[in-house]
Image 1: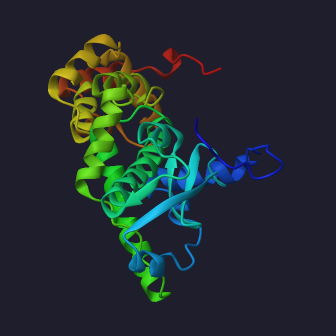
Image 2: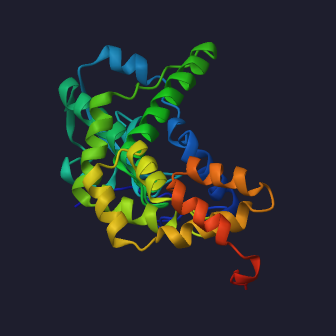
Length: 280
């Protein structure tokens, strides 16, 4: 049985989360990646203890303060690392268990993977993402970790483990395995939601999907599955831009947006404001 010390009177309290603060965290994470997991509990003289011994004992397991789904692991009464609940079970981590240096490296690596996977999963679940978008997100996290370590070095604090490309790839593979990443589903979502009111050409949709790493076949299937008729899309764009450009400029703009020249020319010449559908 998993032995975890409760913090208050045998009752584990779920930390209260400020919705506004959580929203700001997610918005920042979408660009840079969150850093709250970087600030682990102080390890006291754990470094000295590590240098003096080759075997340690797991003396305590406690719920995470910021994330109750993570478990803080103490070796010889000193905080060492945290794991998520599934990892504690899968790795058979128990109070009283002896840990040698090789086992310690395995557990520490699992800890880093678990944190990175959880944060990436939270980001992925905000909306469908492509594999390439997720890889770019992880690269941003890697850069931010390097920046944070430079700051910690200036403050004479111990650097945190750098994010390794192999671990980042494992995170992507796990998300693919679990079905949280799927470029075909992402392509369908993207085509359904991209500039629905403003209008967008099929050609531009293909280009944008390609930039996001979606292969041609997945893009083709999405464009065939989701109805975005070119005649309707070009009229949406004209409606948005007709006051800004004259007819000649508007045709050029439409062509630059990926619409066929003849279609753009016919649509502009035949456009009548009174034919617009009112917006309710």
